[in-house]
Each structure stands twice: as structure tokens, then as C-alpha cells.
Length: 83
Image (cartoon, rainbow, N blue to C red; front, side, top):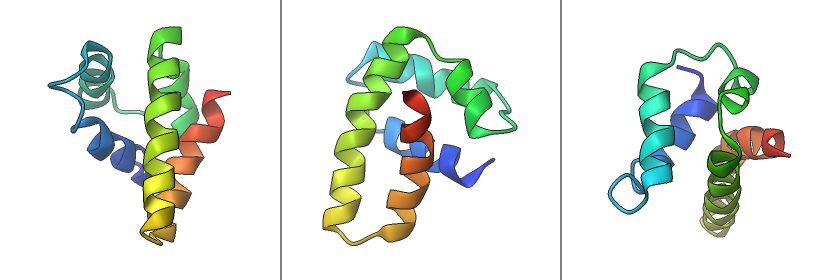
């Protein structure tokens, strides 16, 4: 699995019990074998993109506060494709 997608999957694992949208995206990640971040983002609905936009912004901020530059980089790779 692509490292950036693996980081997003880890983040989403925290939302599967709180959000149907989070659960939906997590399910797609477990079923799909995405060859790139772009392929993953293209497979998302508008609702899923909006959800990830919010969640990843918060997670990137948290990673920056923790000075986890690798995590920031990988989450940002996907976040930038949402626009």
C-alpha cells in the first residue's frame, strides 16, 4: 500500500465508529488496491471528499504540533489532491 494512503487509512480507523462517511471511505481503502493517491481521490464521492478535507486538515495540524514532518508530508500528499 502506498505510504500516504496508509497514513490516511490509519486516520480513518479512528472515525469508523463515529461516522458513516468515514466508515465508507475506510471500506473502500480495504477493498481497493489503489496504484496512486490520485486513483484513490478519483474514487471518492463529493461527500467523502468534504469529509476528508475536514479530517485531514485537523490531522495535519495535529502532526505539525507534534513535529511529525513525515506524517505531515504523507497526509498533505492526499489533502492537496482533494481540491
